[in-house]
Length: 363
Image (tube, rainbow, N blue to C red; front, side, top):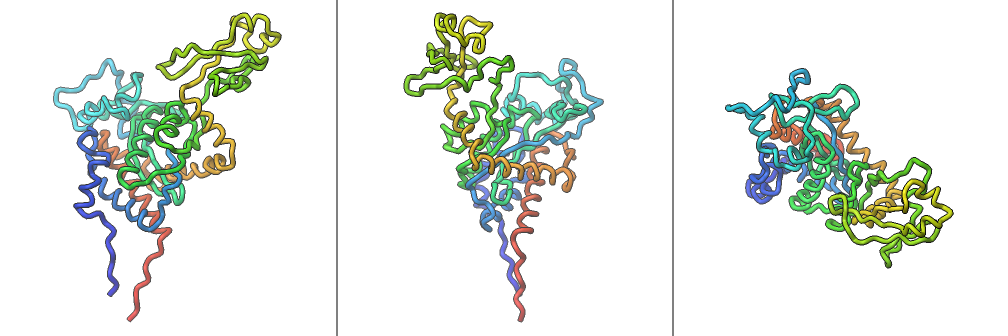
C-alpha cells in the first residue's frame, strides 16, 4: 500500500511562528483562525521548490463588503450602540491600526451601521460602495501567495501593509527578496526609502512623481544635482543652494537660486517667469527615487513590470473563478479569514497544477 506523507505543521511548529502571524494578540480585530491552514499550504509550496524568494510583487484589490450601499449613514449621524455587534466591536478595535482607522484622517462620506470597518469608496469609477481591500504579496517564480492581509479601501493602508508583509514573511519563513515589483501606488518617497535604505531591496517600482510642469517651463530633470557639493545647477549653469530646512512633514529640502542670477538670466522666461527665483524641491529619499527610476528604464525593470501582472491575474481568479467579489461575512476579523482561506485555495490550486501526483506502486 502506498504511504501518504502529510505536509502539515505540527502543533509545536505552529506555536513557534504563531506570534509572528497576523492575528497575534498585539493585532486587535484579527482572530488568526485560518492561519495554520494558510501557513501549512505555503510551507508545502516552499518545500516543493515553488517559492524562489528572489523577487516579490505586491498589490491590492477592492472586494465589496456585505453591506448595502443604500443603508449607509453620514458619520455625524452614527455612533456605536450600547450593545455593539461583533462587527462593530472589531471596528472599534482597529481604529488605531495603520491598516484601518489610522490610515488616513479623512472621514468617509458614509458609514455602514452593520459593518463600519468597511470603507465607502468610488475608486473603481462607478457607483460608490462599501469595501475592504485584500493585499497580496507573491513570489514571482510561480505566483505563490506568501502573505495576505486586509485593509481599509485606501492607498495609504496598502503601503503600510506591504511593509508588514515583507517583514513578516522574512520572520516566518526566512524569505528575503532581492527585488520588489509594484505599481506607482507604492512609489512614494517614503516607501522607496524604506525599501532601499532600511531593507536593502531593489525597488522595481514606478516612482510616484507629481513634479511635472505643464506651463512649458524647465522640468525638474533639467537641473543637475551635484552630490559632492549638495547643490543643483540650472540649465544656465547657475547654482541653487539649500539652507537645510526640512519641509513637507520633514521629508523635503528646498533648493533656491539667487534672485540676482535669475534677473540677469536670458532663460528666465523658460525657467521661472512668474517667480523672482527658481526653486527645486528634493526629497531626503531622492537617492532611492533615482535608483527606482534607473531600474524601471532598464531591461530588468521592464521585465518586472510584466511579471507584476501575475498578482493582477490572481485577483481576477479570486473574483471570477472563486467568486469572491463580495464578502460573505462582516467585520475586519472575518474579512481577514475569508481572504486567507481564498489565498490558501489559490496556492493549493497552483500546487496541484505544478506538482505531479505520485504514481502508485504496482505489486
